[in-house]
Length: 166
Image (tube, rainbow, N blue to C red; front, side, top):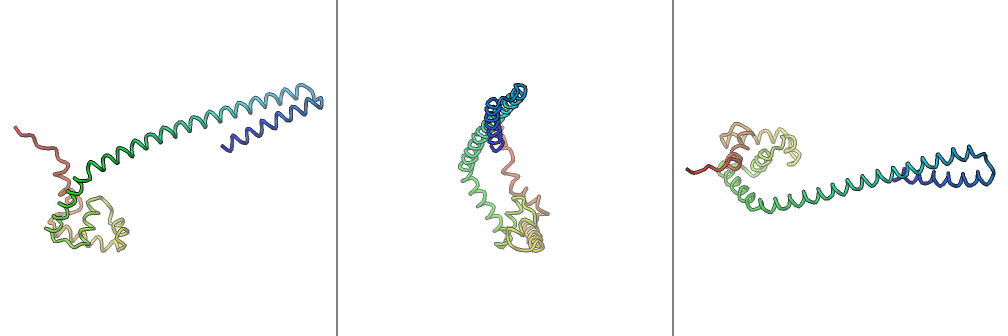
């Protein structure tokens, strides 16, 4: 926008300068040079307006896409909310069967979500070493070998295709 204002000011300056040159009797060759510069300035202004129009059009399209994506996301959230709550309840039940402490439950859930040890430590305002120790305890209590098995324990059945009956 600032470029457009500068170009408009140049165009105004050129028109005023040409007017003064004609009034003072400056040679026509000089005036034609200034007219050519004026035409270039007007062309540049036109180009800037075109570019601005294209960018605004692109922004409008992106805004429409964003709104559609947000709508799709909200629909997805509504459709999956009850299932997610049920799955979360089942995960909590399994954590109970493993006798995980509240802190271990929090860490286990964050591990399943895929956060790093460092991120979990930051979320929980604790040391990374503490999170690693809690993760080791979780794996021991659950008889699982690590993060991948922990996530797979809960996701395998959810993500598997339904079996067909013959």
